[in-house]
Every structure is written in C-alpha cells, then in structure tokens.
Length: 404
Image (cartoon, rainbow, N blue to C red; front, top):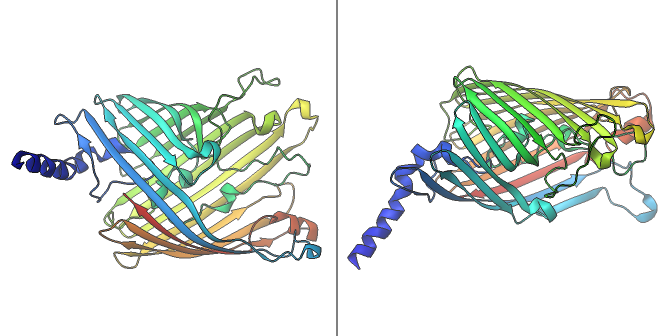
C-alpha cells in the first residue's frame, strides 16, 4: 500500500519536472503549456512525451442587422444569430516519440461533419531547419489563423478573413473567402538560425470540413487541382510565441515579419483558380501586443465557366492589446475589406474594442468585444447595400474559456 502511494505521488509530480523541458515538443495550436501545470507522461530519457489537453469555449452573442436583405412581408427582425453557443469543445492529445516525431490529434465535439476532426498530424524533424508534417493542420497563411486558438486577442477572427467575397454571378458554389484555416496535406518547414522560418506545402484545398480525397486534374493548367501554399518569416529577436498576449509572458521582447502566398487550383467546385498573397507583422513587448496584416486574393474562372473576367479583393487589419494589470488586457482592432472587389468603389470598415480577463490559477479566460461594420466610398446605394449582406452591423460577444 505504501509503495502504491509513492508511485501515485511520483506520477502527480512528473508533470512539474517535464513541463518546461518539453513545452516545445507538445505544440498543438489549441492550448499553450506556458505557465500551466497540466498532466504529462514522459519517459526518463525524454524520448517519449504524451500530453492530453482540452479547450471549451462558451459564448453569448447578439447580432443586429440593418434592413438590407430583410423582407418586411415575413416580419423578419433585425436581431438574428443571437443567444448562446459553443464555438469549440476540443479534446486532444499531443506529444513526442523517439526524439524526432511529434504528433497531435484533436476532436472538436462542437463541430459537425468533417470539422469534428479538427487536427490529426505527425511531424518528422530531420533537423531544426528541415522537418516534414503530414495530416490535417493549419495551412501556412495568415498570422490570425496561425495563432494558438486559446490565445487570440479577440473571440472572433477578423471579418475580412472569414466573410465570403461578392461576385457578380449567381453561382452558389463559388463563395471563396480569403482565410484558409485547416486542410489535409503535406508540408516541409524549418527554422534557420532561430530567426528565419519557412513553410511550403501541398493541400487538398477543400478546407477543414472535408477529410477525403476529392480533387481532380486541372483542365486549364494540366497540374493536380490542389492548394499550393508557402510562408516565410523573419524573427529578429528569436522565435515569436504563437499568442497575442499572455499574462504568463509579460516580459517578452519578440517581433515577426512574414510573407505568404497560395494558389488553389480549381477550387470552389472546379469553377475558379484562387490566388492569395499576404504580409504580416506581429510584436510582443512586455505588456504590449501589436499585430497587422494585409492580404490579397484574385479569383479567376476556369475555361469551362466561359467567364473571361477575374476579380481582385483586398483586406487587412491592425490590432493591439495592452495589459492594464497583470490580469486585464484591453484590446482594439480595425478591420477593412474590399468585399465587392477592386473594380467597384467602396469598402467595409469594421472597428472593434474589447477586453480579456485572465483568472490566474484556474486556466479560465473571459473575453468580450463589440464590433461595428460600416460602409464607405460606394458609388451606388445598391453597391452599398450588397457589401454587408449577411454581416451584422452591430455585434457583441462575451466568451468564457477553460483550458487544461
């Protein structure tokens, strides 16, 4: 009995001894281990590490839409998509094996269809400057998406990344957005001299909701109709943490510059070829976090669609957060989106403000934000009305998050 108690006590103390050493080996894109005492199993040599994790988010949402798109004959209200929701309920595990292979699998119980499998990948590191990742993971595009999910500045991503563009054709299958998120594929990546990073990969291009091989061969370009993506980063002060401000990192001094591009061949039901390019900046300086991105997308139709025109879109944001106290972070963001395309005047301007409160010692985080979507510079009232269709003019979100 005495020996059993000693073994249990040793297992409980094990995470405290391996946490700092293996934090970089248990990357998962969902929960940061920095400053947290979780449960970790590891061999004495450290050649095998296993770390379960969990993230649950519950939010209260209110969205007010202007009158465009509402039919008075049906008594439609201006308030829609309001109430309570669970954006993420993630249970997963991550770790390292044989001192070379890292792995990660996570299930999002709040998702549906293919989105239930949030991530599933393994990574083989030949050396620091060359590794291969295979499976379902984040594509190399956009600082906003590549930030650890539980450590984002605001509870919702910039609307310029997540909102579908407007095309002057009634093709229901063609609704691309600039943001990319998760996908299935293979990627080569590495870190050189602790300052230069690169990621180059090939993916299905079908997004996180599809977990099967469904692509074909391009009739126009005679190459596989897949997503080809790459990203390079420069971090002059060492590796940039994948967070947008943390109470456990109030003495950081890091900076990141990045460029990314991708080509999704015969995306959107084989109807378009979508080219994307982006530039990003992020910095952490003690209590201050700053981030900015600008991104561009060209949508060109395939020959079978018999549409000669191509359409160009531009979006971006600037955001910042400052820890007023060790627990309270004030946040602000300005987001803009040329949703109608560069050939049509006018764009959306979307300021947002909020705060984050961290309950230290119990891994709870409270986030709140308000966003306004305005329209400016349009030539006609129809262009103005179309630009924000489906987007709430006023939106408020309060989100409570627990991580383990």
